[in-house]
Each structure stands twice: as structure tokens, then as C-alpha cells.
Image 1 (cartoon, rainbow, N blue to C red):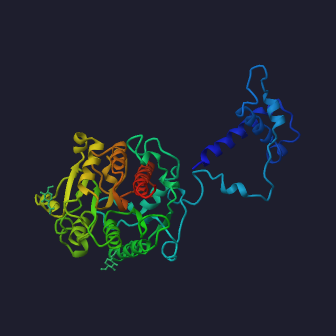
Image 2: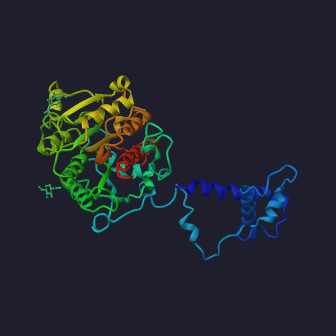
Length: 424
Ligand SMILES: *[C@@H]1O[C@H](CO)[C@@H](O)[C@H](O)[C@H]1NC(C)=O
Ligand SMILES: *[C@@H]1O[C@H](CO)[C@@H](O)[C@H](O)[C@H]1NC(C)=O
């Protein structure tokens, strides 16, 4: 996104004009501001001459401020010309989509070709502790306003990595923001079914330039229950073969529904701490090739450890990151998933309590650089779908900006991982 420098350029020019006012007699202040003040043409000519070496900026020929403004009148567009409105858009303005990408009608226009779709799942009726993730999709979008393009000096972990040379927003892939799946807050069963149908409708789109036949999705949650539906639709759309699941989280989330949910009802048993139990039972999880990263929350019963293994997961705790190093963690994850199709789900509580607001915060978490390094180390995995969940950005909350910002940065990294294997 080149808007910022252009905008700053405009601001600096305007300031220079006003600063020069003392040196120059204006005919009318209003004319000077709203009419022709000082044109950029002569200045541009001079700059070109300097660049071409035809003119040198020597001390013998100083250019006085007043002469610059007298010689360089500002040429404003015709009063009915709005062509610059499509170019000079400040990053903090406009209708907010993720990283300013285009919005698409993903649900009712099945013919649109989409390579990667971003969609919100505003839902938090499956939370055991702090609600607020229903505002997550909006929070991530707000936090993404400074994203949208340009090479990044720390994307990728080495200077020669393919990621380092990638601008995922301008790679030729068609990346769109689908808005949110409408999910009722009043009945979790209906809401989750709505999400499944929404994901399925998006997955059915054909791609524009991607080597995948079906659209790949990055979902913005929403509490972690939503992942079960994302995973279900991804599993069905990418071959009905179990997917290697990379699960970033402070919690194992494979809890037996009888353990977490209290056995009150079957309905209560499906929540943000049990969805991986169900995902495993339903065959979506490639056993032994799936892994938790960042685990540190206490188990509930002694049986949890065995149950977790039976569900097919290996695990890297948050303190293991100290021993393995972030890049070592990335390499270990790649070893576990191999060349299988991967679904990556990222619970924001992977981050330490000091950074974010989430449904169930835990101390001793990862910092932002560790997370971004681990993610980039995954370059090359066959990532068919991913999500970020438990992003709590409710309104009327003070100091929540970091939550949306950090969530957006994770999505930016996930997008990089998705795009890097799909471009030459
Ligand atoms: C997966 O299975 C479902 C139903 O069993 C079927 O409708 C769908 O086409 C299958 N997907 C693929 C990619 O084969
Ligand atoms: C799972 O992995 C372990 C070692 O990593 C291996 O001993 C075991 O046989 C594997 N189980 C399955 C079902 O692949």
C-alpha cells in the first residue's frame, strides 16, 4: 500500500506552502487555499533535472523559499474531478475490510472466482470464561488497517526465504473479504450450523489462479467452538481425508465432553474446550500428525493426558519454546505434519496475558516475535485452511487495541504461508 507516503507527501507540501507564507504576498488567502496556490509542475521539473544530473544542488545557487512558492503554483483538480479519490485513501479511513482487500459477495454469487477468502465467525456462546469474541472479526479488521502490502523486512526467517520476497497482497492471487457469516447468538446449535453452511458455500467457489481447485479460507473468530465447523467444511472440501491439525493454544481443547461441560446435556458438552475431541472422533484430525503448541493451562483430570494422546495430538508446551527455540519449534511442527494437508487453528491465548484479551487468559505465554518466527518457520506446509479465534474485542473496553492488532498480524502471517506455496 503506497497510500501513506503519498499522503504524507501531500501534508508536507501543504505545510511548506503555509510556512512560506511570510515570504510571499498572496492576493487572497481563500484563493490561495482553495484555488491555485503554488503548482507542483516547476518543482517536479527541477527534481527531474536534478535526478538526471542536468542540475546540481550547489550552494552557489540557493533556491529561496519565496521563489519556490512563486514559481511552483499548486494546481488543484477541476472542481468536478474526483479521480484522486481512488488514490489518496488514508489507512484509517474507508469501509473496513481485512487489510483493505476487496469485499466479495461469497454467499449469493457462487460464480465469483476466489483464491483465498477471509470470513468472520462472530460467535461466543461456547465460552467457559470471558465472552466477547463475537466482536473478534470486527476487532481483527480494525487491527489490520495498517496492513495491505509491501515487502516486510521480517517476513520469513532468513533473507533467502521465499517468504522474505513475498508481498502476499499483491501476488496475483484473488484474496477477498467475505464479511461475516450471520450466526444467531440465541442457539449455538443453529449458529454453528449457519457457520458450516457459510464455510461450505465459500469452499465451493472455484479459484482464479491458485493451484487448488477450491477456495481456501481464513476464518476470524469467534470462540474456539467455531473451528469444528471450519474444520468440517475444509475436511469435506479437500478430499475427506483427515487433516494434520496444528493447534496453537494455551489449552489442549481435546477435553472429554463429560469432563468439560459437566455432563449437563449433550448440548453443553460441545464448547470451546471440547471441539477437538469431536473433531478427532469425526475423523477430521490426522492422528499422530497433529500437534498442540503453547500449552500451559492445567489439566482438569488425570485422564486428560491419555485422552489427548488418544485424540491424536503431540504437544509443545510454552516452556518447551525456551528449550527448542522458536525456529526449532517450527521445525518440529513441520516434522510432525510432513507433507499432509494442514489445518492451522490459532487461539489468541497462545500469547501471554500481558499482550491480549481473550476468553481464557493464561500466564507464561509466548511473545509476539516468538509466534511470528514459529509461523514463518512453517513456510512450505500444505495449508488448506486456518483460523484465528478467541479474539475478545468488545466495545466499551479500554486498552484493547493490541488484541486486534496482534490478531491481525497473525492473520497476515497465515496469509503469507498460504500464498507462498501458490506463487512462482
Ligand atoms: C466428501 O464427502 C461428501 C459427502 O460424503 C461429498 O459430498 C463430497 O463431495 C466429498 N468431497 C470430496 C472432495 O470428495
Ligand atoms: C505414532 O507415533 C509414534 C512415534 O512418533 C509411533 O511409535 C506410533 O507407532 C505412531 N502411531 C500411529 C498410529 O501412527
